[in-house]
Amino acid sequence: MSLKNKLIKVVVVEPLGEINLGSIARLCMNFGVNELRLVSPRCNHTSTEAKKMAAHGKMFLENAPIFPNLLEAIKDCSRVIATCGRIDHGEIPLHSSENALKWFLSSPSNNPIAIIFGREDRGLSNLELQMAQKVITLSTSKIYPSLNLSHAAAIILHQLMEYAEMPHSSYQEKISNPAYPKEFNDFIEDAKELLLEIGFLHKHTAQARMTKIKKLLHKAEVSSEEISLIRGIVRQMRWFSKTKKN
Image (cartoon, rainbow, N blue to C red):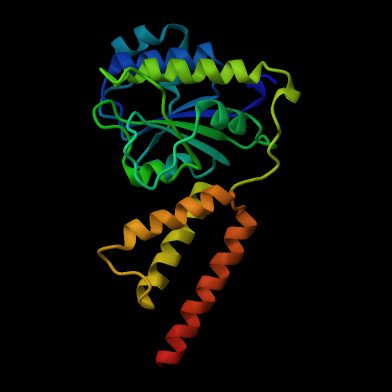
């Protein structure tokens, strides 16, 4: 399998350093990434420094689409992996990079797929991590576990290429098509409103309990059709509840 056959999007959330961003653009060129996407950049991604660091990958900086938030940046992606340096996520399960990247590559269609990298200074929030179907972290020394953003990107993209070059039979193809992040998020918001209305959730614990529901649904790799079915049930329940009150 070649990465050229995959529409891989590298998404960087609120990048702070122009040199780091230039390095990531260069990595996109090195490893056959399809597009670099930026979420609310905090630096000039087309600066001379950034382009100089990008070398032959400067086109990724020049053509990078800018998004106001992460959900908008990944809403067209059928499989999404988030990267994280922290391990204290509570209800957010972490996957090995091998497991997640092989799953990522085995996407059965030519739909866009995305790898998300967080902020240099504070990474991704828990809510942002929950937008991905799988979250991975890299093993580092406990003495100094923090990796430079572009170094983390280099390791993950190198691993991705290695797995892509393996014989197809070396890992099991996943035939599931998980729901798109926007569909999943919209359903979660609908379900949350209903569960608050009927008293199953309370405002001070709603986020923690919805995190558990997200974890369950991500584990099941629910499809767009399944999300649509469940969302229809939720909407009918809300309509019935309001009708009974009236």
